[in-house]
Amino acid sequence: MRIIPLIFLFFSICSFAQNTELEIKIDSITFIDSNPTERKFTVLYHIENLTNNPVSFILNTNSIRPNATSSMSYYPAYRLYQGDEIVNSVSIFNSKTAKEELHKIIKDSELKLAQTKKGSKNNIYDDITKNKMQITQNILNSIIKLNPKEIKKISATLNWDKNRYSQYFDIEYYLNEKATHYFDLCINLMKEEFKEKVSSEDFKRIIEDKTIIKGWIQSDKMEINFKE
Image (cartoon, rainbow, N blue to C red):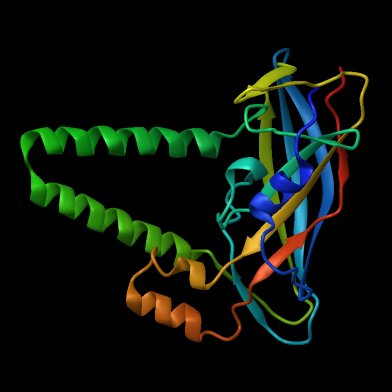
């Protein structure tokens, strides 16, 4: 495996001041080989409010995403290690959610292209408006509130097609069957960064909510099994 800049990958997602009000911890990583060419990992983790006050934060826990593609994202991000070295895991895990989102982006792009060719400016404007409304609603639905010392337990699924070779741009990776692999999570908690993504009224609501906190938190590392 080629050496990659660890600091760059780390700060691509963990770019804010560390938050000490919350803790994220991985509880377990289990797997099942559903067929000879696929391994399904289940990651159980939790987020705990460490304070004596209620706190809120904006985080979409429907899925987890690779750190290298999660800069300025409000999804939890994961990092994969082979020994002490970070593996850029963009093409190693196949997320059903990620595939569905990619399919939606392609369909939306095709629709906008078709509307442009027809000169339907009103339809394009309506489509953009609806899309922003949906993004706004997704963000508002991602506001999580935790009471003092409350714990939120979360589950995430990742699928590996058992292909040990992957490539990200010009960097090649090979998952060594004999190596020990580890996995961790990191989340960015944003606030002002949502200004261009939501309506002015909803942004005001987010800014004025003093319980909504910012910063990043990182989990512990846990071993993940890529052995046969």
